Amino acid sequence: MKVLKFGGTSVGSAQRIKEVAKLVTARGCNIIVLSAMSGTTNTLVEISDYLYKKNIDGAKETVNALEAKYMRTIDELYSTPEAKEEATREIKACFNYIRSFTKDIFTLFEEKEILAQGELMSTALMNIYLKEQGVNSVLLPALEYMRTDKNAEPDSQYIRQKLTAQFDKHQGADLYITQGYICRNAYGEIDNLQRGGSDYTASLIGAAINADEIEIWTDIDGMHNNDPRFVEGTQPVHQLHFEEAAELAYFGAKILHPTCILPAKLNNIPVRLLNTMQPDAPGTLIHNQQSAHIIKAVAAKDNITAIKIKSGRMLLAYGFLRKVFEIFETYQTPIDMIATSEVGVSVT
Image 1 (cartoon, one colour):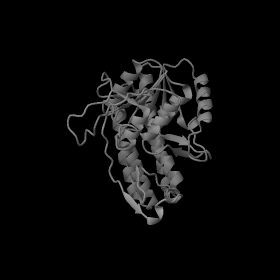
Image 2 (cartoon, one colour; image 1 turned 120 degrees about the horizontal axis):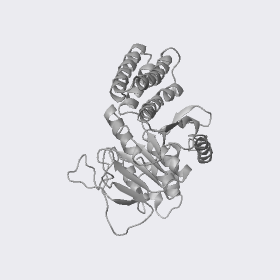
Image 3 (tube, rainbow, N blue to C red; image 1 turned 90 degrees about the vertical axis):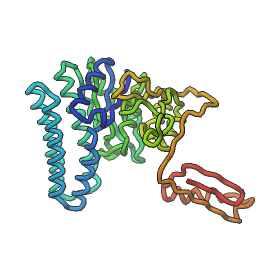
């Protein structure tokens, strides 16, 4: 069994949902992880910002506009009255839930509950469409198995146990649909795996079920050898080691979330980056096999700060670097690169 993750652009319209549904039904019984429809999470953040500022009218107007977009999608997506009615009921329930937050105190906890609605709606739309097409699909609610511990790290044992229980409960399905990004924390509250966390969800699920492969479907055909937004004529890199992919992701390759790499790497599960617009393209395969003496790609990262620290007391001294790193640790600031000499250290 494979895990197939589709980003917001891949399910960003009724036509895109139809194409993804056709793609996944042709690939056998797998787990499908979906992000929110493109633009939804940003709009939900905007709604939350209005609520923080007590601008209730602004929040309601934005909610109404987003709901109207989803109603148009429903009209375009389904052909039977029964499917349209079910989808309308599900989507309206989500938007009524969002509206309930315009009456009370609004905090970070309420914001996370609002942000979760995007993935809940996209998976509901997909699951109802697949059933309309005669596919025996099952919706696995991520909030019932995806959990982080008190350190905000994924609780791998809990995820594996709960997912196994879900599969035992729904045996014989053609497809399994679930939400990316969202989870519960150690206290049972709705939380998330941060922006881009749908990649992380796919990797965690793949590790939990020991998947054959994890496929990340986006709107670009793999990880390129340079940034196609700035450089013309770039080409996809066909194979990368996990560490190479992690560095490229960290230093600017937006196609893959950096945290996605670790669970797959530790469990030796290949990750394949594919393009929903060109499903026949080979994409990029990320695995544990090294290939030496090859420059595969160049990456660039914006908003870098370089700090140069010079001190005569560093010469022939010990403990200086430790003190420097303790300061960054205190402020939870990661260091990208470091260069040292006998009398100084430079970090980015």
